[in-house]
Length: 432
Image 1 (cartoon, rainbow, N blue to C red):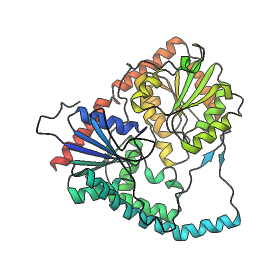
Image 2: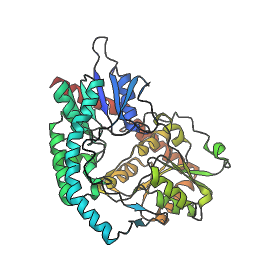
Image 3: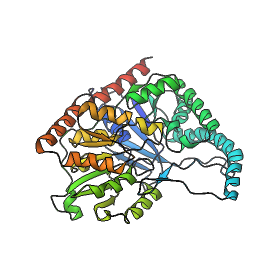
Image 4: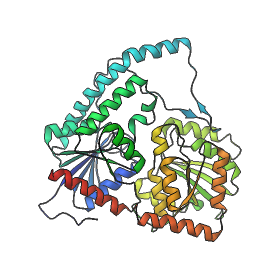
């Protein structure tokens, strides 16, 4: 990592988030590492999650601001719900009556244009609120597409440079991917314009970079979600806390519990993995609660536990306590097919074998590193088979998997390398 800046040579970076900064591991790692490198770091997040409006942590400041609600009195169209599922792994969508379909059509006709106008006004008002509290920055870093126009507006008013951290293929993700075609194309054009107006663009893996370059017309720099620590975290005594015997095997599914993450399929798969407990650890709101209740009716309900989210600094210790890290993300969107979630790299850093989806994003890393196995994420039987392959492996084979994971975490994906890459981007845009 670069040496800290000399006195009088401080630089200021503001990370703009569209979340309350509770479980955003990438942003936490970026903020902490930039602060250690001598930058004055401010994280601007949204209010919510019972979090304080202001706090200091790990050498950086966190400010939470209410997101404006311009033209709130006008009708609007909510973003479509992402495809959901049940514990059997089957996607479900609620049926609609004829009246509901008519209302939906009217909402699309009237509410969707209102939504577009509202968002353009929101970006300006959001920038107003931020500028009153954070009057200057050398770098305004948008952590996702939603805050990118806010960063551009802050640059226009206050100077500095804009860096777009395209950590997802946003137009191809979750609810955006379910927008009607014309609105998705409009959103894609807007993102292209915003990205080309930024001073630099980042992303998190090679497949994303290829899509971004082709669709947005910019060449992003890859900053992997590498692990902050490698092989040093003391495992959380999960078995003791949960009253489980020391011989039980822990299958960990850590992260946001949302549609398409494969939690439903894992809940089915664990029934065919003897002497193993599935721990689903993370936030997820109503969707998570519904899955938890439905999982209680499954044959292996006594071996499925849903636990609250853990703070980013605690993730390595929780990961290190697992026997296998499972991430059977579903191929529901292009974003999911190409994703390489932070928990993949956390598992590498903890030396924990991985069971991941046989999809272009994750499979490339898992197979190249030799740190785990891949499987068909839509088939609970295939997931169970992959879990058994890892859990039932000989001690020598498990040692090989651990060594491969740690080697990758210390090499290509080492976090210090990612920070150096990021600082190189900052130097380039500030000297331009």
